[in-house]
Image (cartoon, rainbow, N blue to C red; front, side, top):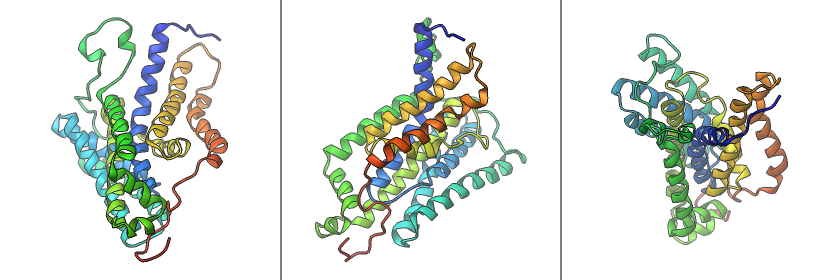
Length: 312
């Protein structure tokens, strides 16, 4: 019951961590920008699912993984726009709207899969996946174990951009003001509705990109279990990261590491049932939420519909 720890194993563990955390990073950044603006979006899972299908389907028919990736983001943005309309304009219960997104997304993905793929609930394998940074270039040695693709780099760049927007721009200040005290922001001339519409739509776009990162870079096709809770883990990462872009990114790395452990330990000489290993990321999510959710403070106006002219 031992595992040989060497540089190859460490790089393999790091590579799998980055690979599995990348879809969650996109989704988590989407959740951050929505919730900091004051709109709860628990529909990330459904938006990721429709993005995962769109990316795989467009990637298969067009032969271009990048076209599929872009279209997946647009599909998620449509769902985000619907969620914004219901939550901001209609002032519907944001939790109920998010649940609806989580039901509609997978349902529509399965329906479209049956329509376009001869009744199958999964797409045909994508021929051209998003390229790897190292192995695809023919590099030899340990770097081949660092199984990192271009979406991992894009996720890191996105996080850096989000940090700059949040803390280095006037719009980021407006965004945080809308989530903390929308009435005060309104008196300063900030269009609360416009900011929230933009943020929730971007939230859907990023969640769609996260879904496509799964089906175009990790698994080569869409299937009903392609996302399987990744959206909910991303939301947990946002809470653990205290609603900040950098905190969400680091939390996603932690959850990705938990999934990497299931792969590495599952392939070693351990007498641990595979079912228990498969539970590890979700058990870790519950434990972290129990330990840290009470210490994290959401934006004060998060989940509260804004009525123009009100004092809150």
